[in-house]
Length: 214
Image (cartoon, rainbow, N blue to C red):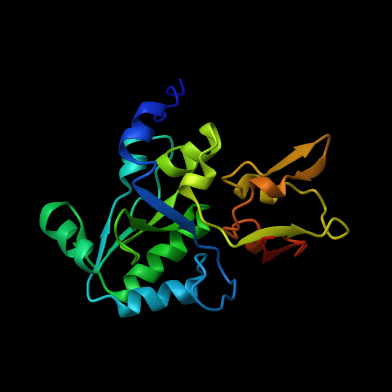
């Protein structure tokens, strides 16, 4: 028998998460200029290279909710927060190489990479690999319409309908429910897209690109 799916309550989301942090999605292979808040892996590498300490731990959301599991080690702390997590939590200190490998591994598994800044601070202190069935931030956005409270996205996916074969690969990869198959044809709702890049990098027809949000 399949276990009953668990989820965050609205009260838990409002009290413990939403409003206390801002998340930005990290798409892969998107070139950015300046201080834009969507990051690709090269910019993520820059953040990790400049860090004095990097910590790694299992995903707290997926441990709590338990709807999906592997790979679990996709949460990274940066600098002071990393030191605090190593001293007080179950986090371990890792190298730059180990951090980048974890980000690639969780991306391949279909998790959205998000960099967090906490209330009262401007620098990124935490990077996690999220899913919409367990993560408090993605769950809040999709279930309760908290997109403006939780996400900051400069880019969205653009669909080339002439190239698209409606294979459904991107539907399975999209954590934001922006892509569905309707009577065998792909339907893309761009206003639900947050430019994570999971769809683009696995499209066999190369029908998806990232464009600047209007």
